[in-house]
Image (cartoon, rainbow over all chains, first blue to last red; front, side):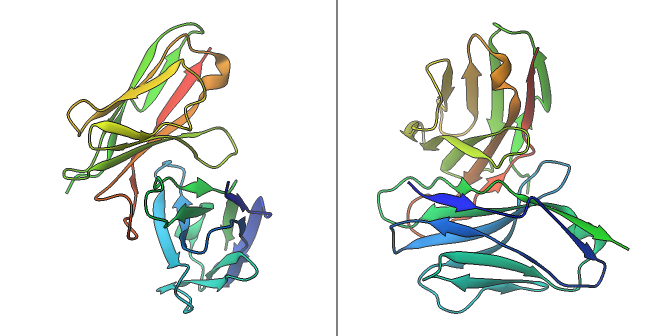
Amino acid sequence: AQTVTQSQPEMSVQEAETVTLSCTYDTSESDYYLFWYKQPPSRQMILVIRQEAYKQQNATENRFSVNFQKAAKSFSLKISDSQLGDAAMYFCAYRSALPGTASKLTFGTGTRLQVTL
Amino acid sequence: GAGVSQTPSNKVTEKGKYVELRCDPISGHTALYWYRQSLGQGPEFLIYFQGTGAADDSGLPNDRFFAVRPEGSVSTLKIQRTERGDSAVYLCASSFLSGGGVHEQFFGPGTRLTVL
């Protein structure tokens, strides 16, 4: 079974600064997807960024980028130019890409990000 | 277009009662997922539907939990003889197509269930 670990329960960053959230995972599969989701107090999970394991290039989405280290099974999220609206819970998630497997997401326990003035 | 909707937003019930939680997925999405998020935890998978059938129900914790999707659209999660440990946020998600490809799961706002 796959597991996802987020070792930082809480992080804090000043507005306009950069912060990195850590995520490690364990799997025996070679083909999979990794995601970062944002969950504000409204509870609605919002996809921030995703990475296909077969792609060596790190994904980027505007101020959000990842550092994907497949051999180390590490998938960190970097938020640049942090904004007050970035304050939320952030979850790292894994999904198998093997044919015939269920498409369920396996989530970590989350990191609460605070953004200060 | 409309996103995934869930009703009710909040549900308070007494121990031993029966509850139904509803999920209305994005129109045209064939895959539907239920997750449970306990306080301070990440969501945990419960069940996944492909069309009308449950393709994977390995996450259902016990036989008090049951889910249906009779017409391949709306789904209902049913919990019998509720226990205080069932208190959590129940999240529903849908995607256009499961299986191969990065088919994004779109989440609803969840139902917060409180069992007194």
